[in-house]
Amino acid sequence: MKRTVVSVLALLLLLGVAIYWNTREGTKTAREVRAEEGYRAPGFTIEALDGGGVLDVGALIGQKPIFINFWESWCPPCRAEMPYLQKAYEEYGQDVVFVMVNPMTSDTLANAKAFLAEERYTFPVYLDDKDGSVMRLYRVGAFPTSFFIDRSGVIIARHMGAMSEEVVETLMKKIARP
Image (cartoon, rainbow, N blue to C red):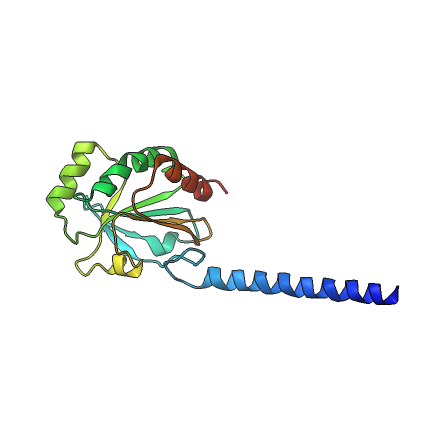
């Protein structure tokens, strides 16, 4: 009987240590800044396409949910997901900060503006600087690439390639509704 009690206590102690260790590690990861799932999102400032000023995304991280999408107007997968992103903006734009980034790597300002006007997209669009610093910071190598950042500032999903309407809706619900 005494051995059983000692064995059970030993198991409970090990379980408690394991739970503590996992919790501590999770907290450590969420505080580390990296453009990867499970890490705190890196901050940056970016200029609005319409000349409406500069957005300080760093000041918003940990305050509001954020959706960041890297796209260019010539990109067929980007064009394919844009209607779903517009729909998400109309539904979640009050709760989620939308940061639609055109890095202008092989796009022109005129083409980007013409595409947005032709399709009547109303979400806010921002331009990366000439060096592509935001694109490099988020290690974007293909278009489109999207990041879903929760209210606490942690990246809960990074999606490369065009998203379906269902994927957009599922991920938006994860960050917009706590």
